Picture 1 (tube, rainbow, N blue to C red):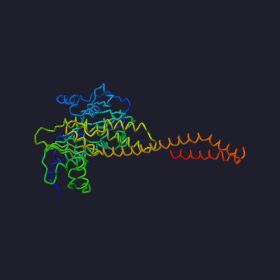
Picture 2: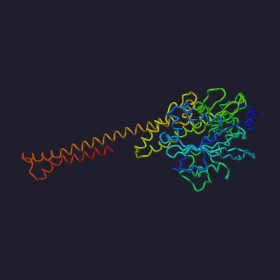
Picture 3: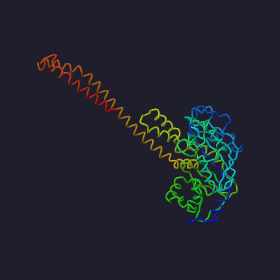
Length: 433
């Protein structure tokens, strides 16, 4: 059964408080020029800055987790904590749809420089002027670099291009921007939305979250759109919700997928969108951490597929595994749950399990090769030590008159064992490779 048409019409015109953080990951230069950027904390409201104090964070997150993400400056190199910067943008992007123009404020650009020249960036936009039904449309286009030339988004990506290791002379086509989205073809989205409307009987918050997370037309999850091909299979719809839905309180709900995160909060209390916890704490210290882990595992998995064995790569992975792969990250229940769901939705645990399996197989293979080589060396040493015995064997044959000295028979009987020894050495040596 389809939801009420009146409700679908409501969402076509309904505007509500919402924030979209567009997130990408790229390889940065070894010494990127951050002139024009400020410290990350500079755009956080004064009333919230106390909650980002390191001492406060240490009482929310476990030391093993927070030390990798927000260490003191003097401890940064020791803990691999990222360097964080922000650049104020405060320009409007004009989004055109069906002969209408919508003003989208673009607030700021945040940069997080992780170890090994990994650069994660976040572009904050406010969608208060955009009807709910157009949020997935806008999200879908911008994530794929479908924006007007000379717009604020083009300006931002040119800034990122200058920080990128693979800096381009010009960026005009879709493919020109792909070096700014490592391991993928689009940006990730992190959406916070205020729900100040009631749902009809046959359409729920779950439907809305699914459509926002997958950038699907509003109403498509129930077949309420003109194009019926866009309605997802029931099994897929249920799978996405089961794997990534976070539901603890009636006031809000969240859904995480492989490349998006949606938080929907009810406005019954009339307090507005309570975004600080989800934008500045959970986004920075949980979501971005998961994005970094996912990217690292993807890259190292590709490296393991190469034929040449790299022992340093193994050591790097084991060190990374020890520092970043944590079952619990907080003293509190909710951050741990959010962390668990985001990891599951991104497939981090599966990627990790596959890597551990590959490493175990590689270790067994290398151990076998090492053992075979050691056995071959021992065999060589043994056979070489027996050469003098073979010479004495030939001399004894002469003494008992079985062969004559310096004859073919003498050399045949005394050197044949040497030849056999050499052939055995070659055989075992080849097997050890």
